[in-house]
Amino acid sequence: MDKGANMDYEERISSSQGLTFNILEQMLKEKAGIVKINLDILKTLNLYNKDGYYNIAGELLADKNDVAFSGIDIVKFGKAINKILYRETIKNKSLLFQYDRVIEIFKQYYRYEEIEGYTRIKKELIPKRAFRESLANAIVHRAYNIKRYIQIAMYEDRIEINSPGGLPEGISEEEYLNGNISLLRNPIVAGVFFRLDIIEQFGTGVARINDEYIKSIPKPNFVVTENNIKIILPVTEFDKLNLSEDEWTVYDLLREEIELGRGEIDLKSGFEKSKTLRILNSLADKNIIQRLGSGVGVTYKLK
Image 1 (cartoon, rainbow, N blue to C red):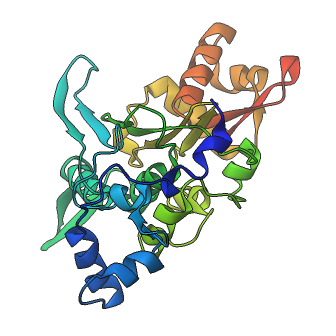
Image 2 (cartoon, helix red, strand yellow):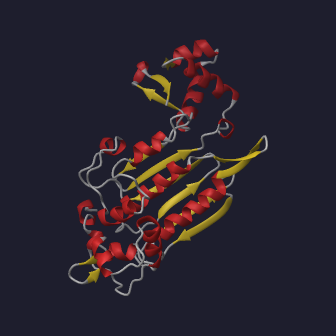
Image 3 (tube, rainbow, N blue to C red):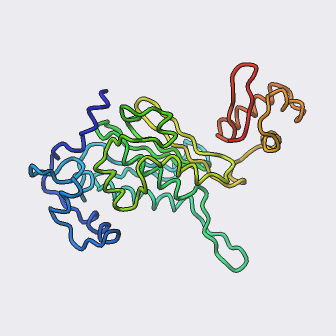
């Protein structure tokens, strides 16, 4: 697929020209004090072309959105992936409606209240700001000419967000992970999300997601392929990690040292090589530790 072909995709003429913008109007009223949306405002937002037509970006943000596969498929699993607790495909609605609806589902499963003394304290299994940022990034940066929904899989120990399209042409994986994004795949949609304070600053999403996990044992993970970007957000609470006693032993050793080789962990833990390797692989799969180097010189450290 020619990635560059999607750079102006949102500027193309919409198949529907009878669009309404009640959801956008309400959000602009709350965030920008705009009482009534009109054609001049829509032109300023680049949703209505100077040549006299609504573009695809306009349809994506309109109340009724018939752009194929521009929705979000969300699944909440139980303790096993063959047990589905909830599933919803949010489609044919404004991207703004989709965003708000997914946040509602997130709150249902990953926020709770705990009584401390005489006070009810709201707590989060996964940082809400990290999830909001990940969701907004998926909506703003996905390739809308790929016929696949954004997919959100919610597990007991993590959330995985899959965004179709990979990185725009001209951006490396390193630049993406370091927040050095100068090219936007959908600058019109991104501009509206920015005006509504859904995204704070272009190109800094990964850094803000990581910031939410500074005090957490498990860290977010970002998997970039040619046709997909996956963001994995783990739960942050100790008792939700489901670490075995042996995994805690290795974790505690790595917490006391900057980094250790597998042989050093054998000596300090008393485990045999095969057992240590099995534990290290499990901790790496849970994104709690990282491998450094290669071959016999491999060492391990906490993320």
